[in-house]
Amino acid sequence: MKKFLVFILSLLGLCLLAFGIFFFMIFRPISTVGPKTYYRVYDGAVQVFALKDGEVRSLLAFLKPGETLMAPTVSDASLEVPPWLSWIEPVVVDFVGRARYFMYKEGKKAKYNEFTVGYTNKTIRGGFIRELERTGVLKNVELSFLPDQCSFFAQVLGVSITARGIVTVPEGDRDRLLLHLYWLKIGSASMPERVLRAVENLFASTYEQSPKYKIRLLKITFKDKAMVMSFKKAMDGDTGVSE
Image (cartoon, rainbow, N blue to C red; front, top):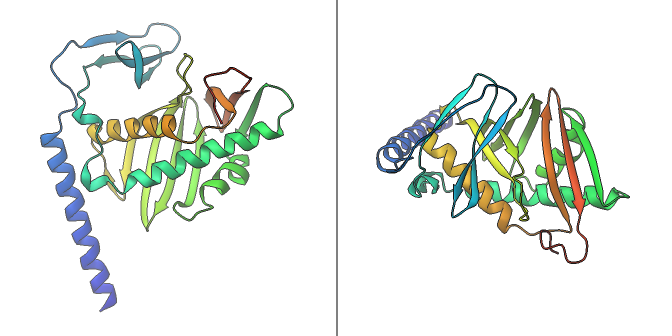
């Protein structure tokens, strides 16, 4: 009887999720009326950012030689997390807050004001992943590094979250970290592009609003089975980092 009840509840949850995705796709357009910009990379690699009022708003793509992108004008509506996915907001807040605290602890161990540390798929588990799992919000966390991207897996209330993407630090005086998702799955359901952009926006705004410590991430690079992060400790008068 219990197994049958669990099956019915799971089926109902999947139906609600599917309906929410369908509703969101219809009534939340990802682009709005405006110019579209075409990019093509012939040599090197290029990060394409979206701007608003002269400031970097989001990371649109990381393009390699031969790749192209048609970048539309993004609508404000598409940057809102849909109501049926509101439960993911505290998950992102917890993730970002613990990432900030992990950076702070790395800074306390460093002797110099500017320093670089590297992590492999194995060593990241002993520090950062253990920090993420500390409160029990995220369970069975897995983080793997690939060339120019990373993959993430975790369980929240028994629901699996799987994603692949890249994070980057835009140039400028403000302390920001931007996320670009290539894909995101909740359970077995692949999220539409509108959801990806909404989660990216939530990540960026949460990072800016989260408690800050006297350390700033300057650069992050993904390699095969490794991640390299460069940091700077705050000096007096440094407006980019606060207590």
